[in-house]
Image (tube, rainbow, N blue to C red):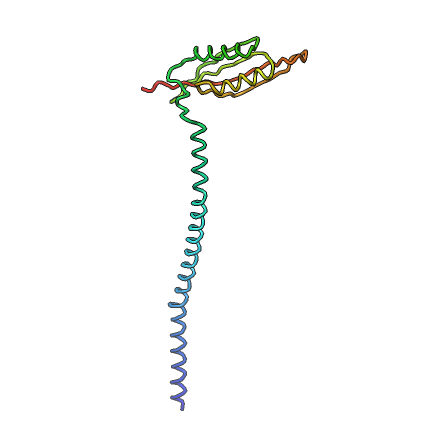
Amino acid sequence: MFFRERQQLTICVVAGVIVCVFVLFGYLPLRKRMKAVKQAKIAQTLAIAKGAADGRQLPLHKEQLLKMQNKLGNYKANIPEKNTFGGFLGSVTDLMNENNLKEQEITPGVEVKADQFNCIPVSIRCKGELSQIFKLYRQFQALDRLIRIEQVKLSNDGGYKGQVSMETRAIIYYRAKVG
């Protein structure tokens, strides 16, 4: 009887050790691996969803790009290869005369040289009616060269006779000589 109880106890201990070994070396590592696989699957699902959402945005980005390309056109064509500052001054003077603006003053600043484009700051002043000045700005946009208006100051005359003094700081560009 004692032998039999001992045999049962030994079988229970061996079974317990087998269960512990299975749990420690089989079940727990497998569970940890399954958890890592589930997390990887969730991360992949999120990446796929983000890619799909980005894919739906692609036509909108293409449309924006086309609009920007149409808006910009060939901007290099609006930047002359030579410093044609004299021609620009003549064009601005002609536009101001065409709009019957008075007290015209165009003052060039110090030329700034860069890698691809050089620029010349220009101060433009004149006096006239507000509608004439706005027409001048619209004509600036239609010029065949790139002009960046940096600052505009409009001041009403002291007598309130409808005359506005305009001061503009603009920058004109031309291509730098490479080589």
